[in-house]
Image (tube, rainbow, N blue to C red):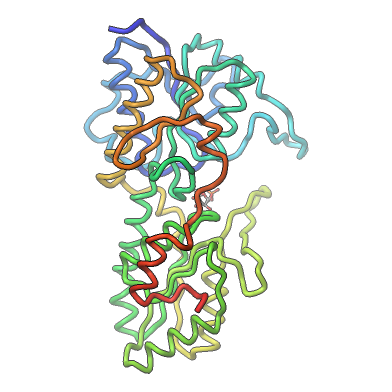
Length: 361
Ligand code: F6P
């Protein structure tokens, strides 16, 4: 048995399917080594509080239902960067020292951070400033963390979007309608592209491929002329309007997120094709579903490997999946730049081979 350790684990950034399965895997492996695991609540915010908001996690906390559940039992947050923490008066305050103090107060030997590229970058900065022993696990439905082929939550989000297309197709066909499905993914079109192929879309628009509305109209009219009077269109949330501007929805409190291109596109297609158009904005159901088998497997693989890295005292690393193997890479390399859709890659070529209109021709 390795030397006893105290480790912390937190989930940070937007939630997604599979986070609880990662927690279960890491806790299982770490407690099996005789270590103590503290689950830190609401990401780095839990470490900012004094005393830190954290609870001891044992394998008994993970009954048979938890690996099946979406969300995160620890809670998370996708705002509140400790280096620029928003105050009520609108100013930002550097609270990074409080997070580092929380790590010390819990007397941690290491921390596992489960996050997307933004959260991982912040955790890495904290680790460098405070000398924290950090290991990260990539999660994001957007699948845009470079250095790993898959991030936790992506596969389930693709399945949810594919299920949505499966449900839109019969109603589209019954009413001779053009159905637009707007999906998430931030600046990456992975969910739209893969779900669009899997769900039989006629048109897929992604941020990486500039489109012209005339090309989409031509595709839909071509389908109509060939006797197919319905169409499925998938659009990624960060696809810009025809003027090149990304559409953002502002929320009360000043925060914002991409949303709205589906309805704009719907109006343009209704005007130009004279088809009846309906729009579905899939939204957060892509995040809250029960994890599928692939996400549960990756959660288990990543959770166990992260604990092994700590056992070997290999810090400043992110676990990753490459060529059918779990590997680990320096965090700086992992988040150097977002992994967008390769516009010359095999998935795009497949879509073109299927005759799917990607808007550029
Ligand atoms: O990064 C995950 C994600 O779901 C994006 O796909 C989406 O743009 C964003 O988060 C939504 O953020 P929020 O939860 O703040 O609405």
